[in-house]
Amino acid sequence: VDLATELANAFVAHRRVHHVVYDDVRPALERLRGRYRMALLTNGASDLQREKIAGAGLAPCFDEVLVAADIGISNPDPRLFRAKLTRLRIEPQAAVMLGDSQSRDIQGAAAVGMRTIWVNRTGLPRRNGVTCDLEVANLTECVEWITARAPMR
Image (cartoon, rainbow, N blue to C red; front, side, top):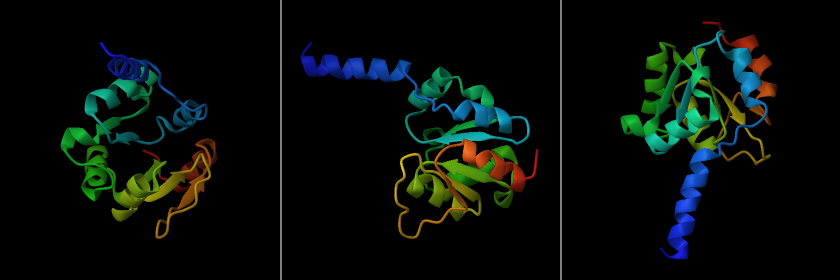
Protein backbone atom coordinates (compact mmCIF):
# COMPACT_ATOMS: atom_id res chain seq x y z
CA VAL A 1 0.00 0.00 0.00
CA ASP A 2 1.41 3.38 -0.93
CA LEU A 3 1.59 6.29 1.46
CA ALA A 4 -1.28 8.23 -0.19
CA THR A 5 -3.67 5.28 0.17
CA GLU A 6 -2.56 4.70 3.74
CA LEU A 7 -3.12 8.36 4.63
CA ALA A 8 -6.53 8.41 2.92
CA ASN A 9 -7.61 5.32 4.85
CA ALA A 10 -6.29 6.76 8.11
CA PHE A 11 -8.16 10.01 7.51
CA VAL A 12 -11.47 8.20 6.92
CA ALA A 13 -11.00 6.05 10.04
CA HIS A 14 -10.00 9.07 12.14
CA ARG A 15 -12.95 11.18 10.90
CA ARG A 16 -15.43 8.43 11.77
CA VAL A 17 -14.40 8.28 15.44
CA HIS A 18 -13.72 11.95 16.19
CA HIS A 19 -16.81 14.11 16.32
CA VAL A 20 -16.51 17.78 17.17
CA VAL A 21 -19.43 19.02 19.24
CA TYR A 22 -19.15 22.61 20.38
CA ASP A 23 -19.51 23.18 24.13
CA ASP A 24 -22.76 25.10 23.73
CA VAL A 25 -24.59 22.42 21.72
CA ARG A 26 -25.69 19.97 24.43
CA PRO A 27 -26.84 22.62 26.93
CA ALA A 28 -28.84 24.41 24.22
CA LEU A 29 -30.45 21.20 22.99
CA GLU A 30 -31.31 20.15 26.53
CA ARG A 31 -33.02 23.49 27.20
CA LEU A 32 -35.10 23.15 24.03
CA ARG A 33 -35.69 19.38 24.12
CA GLY A 34 -39.15 18.39 25.25
CA ARG A 35 -40.45 21.92 24.77
CA TYR A 36 -40.33 21.78 20.96
CA ARG A 37 -40.36 19.20 18.21
CA MET A 38 -36.83 19.25 16.90
CA ALA A 39 -35.20 17.87 13.78
CA LEU A 40 -31.67 17.61 12.59
CA LEU A 41 -31.25 18.16 8.86
CA THR A 42 -27.95 17.45 7.16
CA ASN A 43 -26.44 16.95 3.72
CA GLY A 44 -23.89 14.31 2.93
CA ALA A 45 -23.64 10.57 2.61
CA SER A 46 -26.33 8.99 4.77
CA ASP A 47 -24.17 6.31 6.39
CA LEU A 48 -21.42 8.76 7.30
CA GLN A 49 -23.81 11.44 8.57
CA ARG A 50 -25.77 8.98 10.71
CA GLU A 51 -22.54 7.54 12.06
CA LYS A 52 -21.32 11.02 13.00
CA ILE A 53 -24.63 11.92 14.67
CA ALA A 54 -24.66 8.68 16.65
CA GLY A 55 -20.97 8.99 17.52
CA ALA A 56 -21.54 12.51 18.82
CA GLY A 57 -24.45 11.24 20.91
CA LEU A 58 -26.87 13.78 19.44
CA ALA A 59 -29.53 11.53 17.87
CA PRO A 60 -31.65 11.24 21.06
CA CYS A 61 -31.96 15.04 21.20
CA PHE A 62 -34.09 15.09 18.05
CA ASP A 63 -37.56 13.88 17.15
CA GLU A 64 -36.45 13.45 13.56
CA VAL A 65 -33.08 13.07 11.86
CA LEU A 66 -33.29 13.73 8.15
CA VAL A 67 -30.28 13.13 5.91
CA ALA A 68 -30.85 14.76 2.56
CA ALA A 69 -29.32 11.86 0.67
CA ASP A 70 -32.05 9.57 2.01
CA ILE A 71 -34.65 11.40 -0.04
CA GLY A 72 -32.45 12.45 -2.93
CA ILE A 73 -32.62 16.20 -2.33
CA SER A 74 -29.97 18.47 -0.83
CA ASN A 75 -29.88 21.90 0.78
CA PRO A 76 -30.99 24.53 -0.18
CA ASP A 77 -33.78 22.83 -2.16
CA PRO A 78 -37.05 24.00 -0.55
CA ARG A 79 -38.53 20.50 -0.95
CA LEU A 80 -36.08 19.25 1.67
CA PHE A 81 -37.29 21.81 4.20
CA ARG A 82 -40.93 21.04 3.35
CA ALA A 83 -40.22 17.33 3.90
CA LYS A 84 -38.76 18.10 7.31
CA LEU A 85 -41.76 20.25 8.25
CA THR A 86 -44.20 17.59 7.05
CA ARG A 87 -42.47 14.90 9.11
CA LEU A 88 -42.67 17.09 12.20
CA ARG A 89 -46.22 18.25 11.41
CA ILE A 90 -45.19 21.91 11.74
CA GLU A 91 -46.24 24.86 9.59
CA PRO A 92 -43.30 26.89 8.21
CA GLN A 93 -44.21 30.07 10.11
CA ALA A 94 -44.09 28.11 13.39
CA ALA A 95 -40.63 26.69 12.69
CA VAL A 96 -37.15 28.03 13.30
CA MET A 97 -34.10 26.84 11.39
CA LEU A 98 -30.68 27.13 13.01
CA GLY A 99 -27.88 26.74 10.53
CA ASP A 100 -24.28 27.65 9.91
CA SER A 101 -24.47 27.94 6.13
CA GLN A 102 -26.02 31.08 4.68
CA SER A 103 -26.49 29.60 1.22
CA ARG A 104 -27.72 26.13 2.20
CA ASP A 105 -29.43 26.44 5.58
CA ILE A 106 -30.64 30.02 5.82
CA GLN A 107 -31.71 30.61 2.22
CA GLY A 108 -33.36 27.20 1.95
CA ALA A 109 -35.39 27.62 5.13
CA ALA A 110 -36.36 31.22 4.35
CA ALA A 111 -37.59 30.13 0.92
CA VAL A 112 -40.35 28.07 2.56
CA GLY A 113 -41.27 30.72 5.14
CA MET A 114 -39.36 29.48 8.18
CA ARG A 115 -37.73 31.85 10.64
CA THR A 116 -33.96 31.56 10.52
CA ILE A 117 -31.04 31.84 12.88
CA TRP A 118 -27.61 31.97 11.33
CA VAL A 119 -25.00 30.50 13.67
CA ASN A 120 -21.95 32.47 12.57
CA ARG A 121 -19.21 31.12 14.87
CA THR A 122 -16.35 32.61 12.84
CA GLY A 123 -17.67 36.12 12.18
CA LEU A 124 -18.13 35.75 8.44
CA PRO A 125 -19.62 38.70 6.57
CA ARG A 126 -23.22 38.33 5.50
CA ARG A 127 -23.61 37.41 1.84
CA ASN A 128 -25.47 39.80 -0.44
CA GLY A 129 -29.18 39.07 -0.48
CA VAL A 130 -29.10 36.68 2.49
CA THR A 131 -31.31 37.74 5.36
CA CYS A 132 -31.96 35.98 8.64
CA ASP A 133 -34.11 36.72 11.66
CA LEU A 134 -31.18 36.47 14.04
CA GLU A 135 -27.40 36.11 13.73
CA VAL A 136 -25.56 34.59 16.68
CA ALA A 137 -22.01 33.53 17.45
CA ASN A 138 -23.14 30.48 19.43
CA LEU A 139 -26.24 28.51 20.40
CA THR A 140 -26.48 29.99 23.88
CA GLU A 141 -27.41 33.34 22.34
CA CYS A 142 -30.38 31.95 20.45
CA VAL A 143 -32.17 29.83 23.10
CA GLU A 144 -33.90 32.81 24.73
CA TRP A 145 -34.87 34.19 21.33
CA ILE A 146 -36.47 30.88 20.38
CA THR A 147 -38.35 30.41 23.63
CA ALA A 148 -39.69 33.97 23.47
CA ARG A 149 -40.97 33.64 19.89
CA ALA A 150 -41.76 30.00 19.11
CA PRO A 151 -44.89 28.29 20.40
CA MET A 152 -44.25 25.18 22.45
CA ARG A 153 -45.11 21.65 21.30
